[in-house]
Image (tube, rainbow, N blue to C red):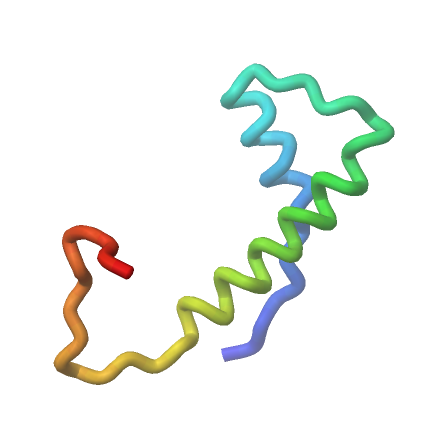
Length: 62
């Protein structure tokens, strides 16, 4: 399966519309860069292999 480049602009616009949030034009590039960074981090988390016996914890206990 090939990876497609993810374009954060439509996501930014849809989310801003949903939240009735006005993103100033001068901030759009920064918002899109941050969305791309978060997507990269989420991809790393989702691809991390877990043992078959791992279960989700109902609460976080450090």
